[in-house]
Length: 527
Image (tube, rainbow, N blue to C red; front, side, top):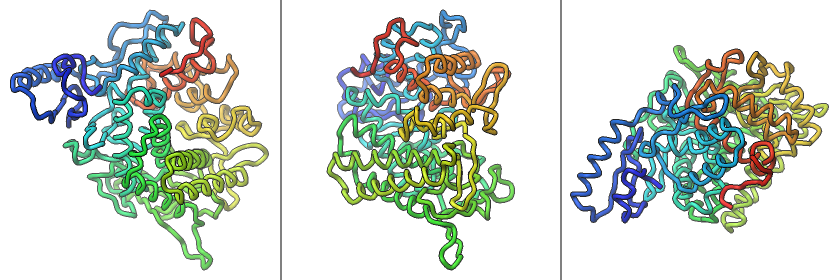
């Protein structure tokens, strides 16, 4: 639902499609276009909304200190959901999943974490939504911008609900349509400003200032234009989830098809070697930090390290926004291979754009074969390669990562190359691995990822409680934490990490119910 309990009764007869989530959504700021509203109802609603707005805190501030009553478990985790009237989107199907899960979870602290994290995207990040315009602007949390990568993951744990919750499905469709507009215009960019229809002012991004991007971008539309191939994968991932749940071909409109065309443009351009047959340097994208910029300059005059042709697709930045050492990121290409197969699947099912489906299948196979040929040596995956003989064995904190290859759907968790590689990644052999008094891993998200990559009960419980015991007492998942002090962390409000944690618990509810429930019966939302 688009509106909270405060006005649900008052406007019970008004169709939800006539409501816009308005320009300011720190609380309830509902605008409407229903033609026959009575003046008395308008005045009453405005008065109630004004009163409610005054009592709705900014969630960035709200998330920095414990709220609500603590859980009854040993950690006493706080209740961190905003008041129903302050939530940015309400869904009865989401509330049912929360009730179903928390009534069966045997650890009250884990139940509280699920209660806080599962609805966090809907509770706090729907900054703008207009069903009639088919547009939605979803922020990542404490940064007012829409990341293609983040939104693809922020909604991943709701996919089983899209077939039974039409309003939630409409929201996701609007997210996809808005992102299609972004990609069709700026396919090399990954983070964007609000759509002009929203009335929301663009945000000022310190890290995008004094940065020269080619092809040029408009900072009134683009929040940041670091080129990361997995951002485009996130768009396909969300599109696939929506279509598989709804079979709604109207998602595949002209804007969406234009965005897909632009994705293939990037694939073709960035798969090419850096030098042509006459040793001319080829560059389709350049990202240069000018003097005074906060962000570091991409190597080689903003063009990135040289690369040879492999069949993989190059990228300039990692999912963590760090600069790539070498262009071919194995996990990003693995995700791309999987998502291109998914793209072909839904196009074939919808009987739309058969030529695009053929292209998707070709590139999916080409990329997969290139990964096995160029990234794996002695059953060890490299995180990055360059097609010129260089490779870098490491793993990053974000997803896609090598640790996440089973989660991405690229290989089975028992594949010998994955098992051997994982042994290095979760050890001092990985320069990004850390181990301290309270925490070990490659950041909080790595322990969530590790659960998706093992069937060992003890390993799952170790990872699960490493996360649960390191939320800084806030009952939310953070971007990074101090391995010696869990109250020292970055980003108290990080919706993707919250969604990812909830998605992992739902995976265990199906795959390992005895580990988390009071009984051994599996649970699947929507069934």
